[in-house]
Length: 377
Length: 76
Image (tube, rainbow over all chains, first blue to last red; front, side, top):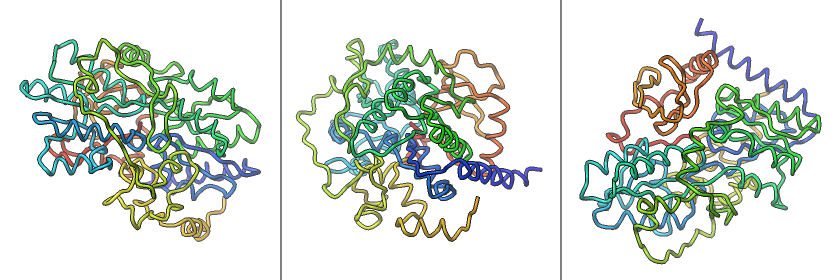
């Protein structure tokens, strides 16, 4: 029986693709917010299954990509402080700072460690009472509850040698900024499924209403994404705006109240600079004053940070859906996963890295592939 | 904390954010934390599909502390 399932899933994918083609009567531009969604779309070639009317724009939801350069430089400075154990999610290690990256520091002898869970940093802090343990707390609302828990537990247990370098970002202000951008072309969003599993749907209602866009909260599997696009197209064609939930098996309208309560307790909303995008008001989370003893920004004085982005990198435009990675003259030549100019080429969720990994070397080639595949819905 | 089975690999996961879970439930796990309880029938279908698509590689990696370069950070 199981052998039939891949056929079944292909059949389902083709079903959704033909549904999309049946409903699409004119061109629509739909942005998927999450980097995980971008990765799945490019990996499975979902954009190439769609009718020519539908263009998918890749959004800003790659947490590693939008972590500001200043923060990466600060991480590099702290990781070089003697006696520090610097802990991070793996994707951050190869993100280029102004001068080098965490992986290079590690190679040069700094104690930089990759963690699966922020709670592992607490274990390391307990096991190394004479060392200062710093955790690079990045990510969207999905990751923030886990990081909040680690910081909260450190405070409860009096782990004075643990601190977090917090650079959290929030999804709705980024979507707002994209809609307010006069250059922008987004007509509907595939909303961030995992962010909404924490935060629920209510934050998206005012955005959908203000800009008259449909926001379809969507999952991360190929069939989720095709269904999300189909729902978005049907809303667009009918002139409907509002919030819809494709990912109901995971996302409840109210989100996860326990996670929200912990976020509220540990963090407060702040303005945040996004790499490649700039300062967005009320778009980040920072530690509340009560947690200052565990705030690496307070614990470590690394002095003034002056940053410099490589002039050639267009990751800011890629993150806002204004350009495709293949429109960058450096793509695949002077910028590769081995030697990245910008963070979108580093993270597996970055659009540039996804295009590079799955052979999207040029726009004409991608269009050719669609034609050659002969998919007719 | 509880133990979650990722396609044969058992791993300790923080359950503080999902107080209503019971043994046998499916959960969405992100960086070692269960964030949401998943509708069981839907979860089973997706799990089978993922297995067919060979998408469980991330979950079957060795412990990241032992294999540091393999660290992966899933969706935001």
